[in-house]
Every structure is written in structure tokens, then in C-alpha cells.
Amino acid sequence: MMTKFRGVRRPLHAIGDGHNGMDWINRYIDQPLLHGAAGLLRSWHLRTRQPPELLEPTWNLVVLSFLLIASGQVMAGETFTLSVAALIMLALPSARKLLSAVKAGGGGYGAREYKSLRARAIAKREAEWSVRIIVLFASACLPFIARIDDPIGAYFMLGASIWFVLTGPLKAYLDAAEPPEPNEGDRRYSGVFHFG
Image 1 (cartoon, rainbow, N blue to C red):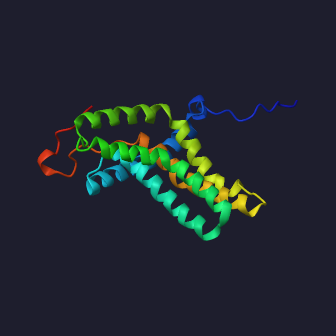
Image 2 (image 1 turned 90 degrees about the horizontal axis):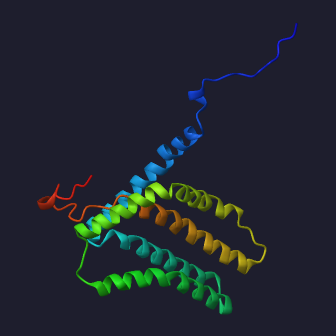
Image 3 (image 1 turned 90 degrees about the vertical axis):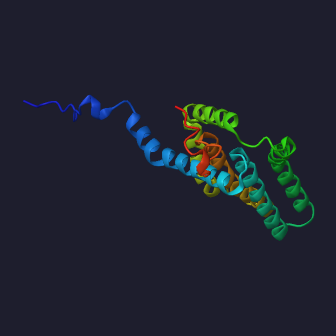
């Protein structure tokens, strides 16, 4: 008499409903990157005394400046003009954000801005988890899958890959990271702004 093989049965709690893999990604990838982004925001705020939301546009302009210098080294003529135009278009939103912050003047970063940033970060942290992981995965894969035979097109694609790798994940994680308290680092105000 032959016994029918029915496979190995595992307890239902061991199988789970797909959350084991997600928990692993959340615990070992997403959460450490969120903590790192919060640390970056805190360091930025402590060192520059600027609002934390200005870190991302500043970093974007630094990366674009590096790409402008690099494109000047490898391109000339119309292709250089086209690359400068593309870099300027990428820089406009960041420049506008920084200029509007300068025009706003001494408003600074207080309890109201902290509460607003914190609420937005919590909403993004909960709602855009998969977007952060997709951006992270795309930035890891893009430099390896983007191959173009034309040398000028290859330079443009390399520049776009570098820009996306250096700015895409950082923006996603800075937007969802816990912002620093307004007077963090100032011992006179320690413990005043603790919410929830």
C-alpha cells in the first residue's frame, strides 16, 4: 500500500501571511535608515541652526553642483549646454525653496514648525513605507541596469543615475524621519518639547 505524500506541514503561525519578510525589511533596512535620517536632521539643525527641511534642498544643490563640474570636464559644446540646462531645471525647485526660506527671514524653527514637520513625518512614515523601499531598491539597481551605447547618452544616464542615487533615497527618508526639537542642544530648553 502506497502512502500519498502531502508535503511538510508547518504550523500556521510559522507560515504567517507574508509579514515575516516585511518585518525583516522594516527592522533591518527601513528603521535604521529612518534613525540615520533623523540623526542627519538633528546634526544639520545643531550645526547650522537652520530648519531641518532645508537640508534636502541644500544637499540637492551640492550634488547638482558636483554634476555641473563633472559635466564640464567630460562634455563640450551643445551637449554641455544641454546638460547645464538640465541641471538648472533640476536645481530650480531646491533653489526656490531656499530663496523662500531666506525671504521669510527670522521666522526660524519653533514649536509650531516642529509640530507640523512631525505630523507630516509620521504620516509619511506610515503611508509611504513601500515607496521608500522602492526608491531605495531603484537607486541600488539603476547604475547597473542603465546601459546606453551612445557615449553622450551614456554620460547623461550616468549623471542621472548619480543624481538619483544621491538624492532620491535621502529625500524619501528625510521626509519621513523624526525632526529635531526646536531647541535641541540648548540645555536651557531641554525637555520642553516632548509630545506623545
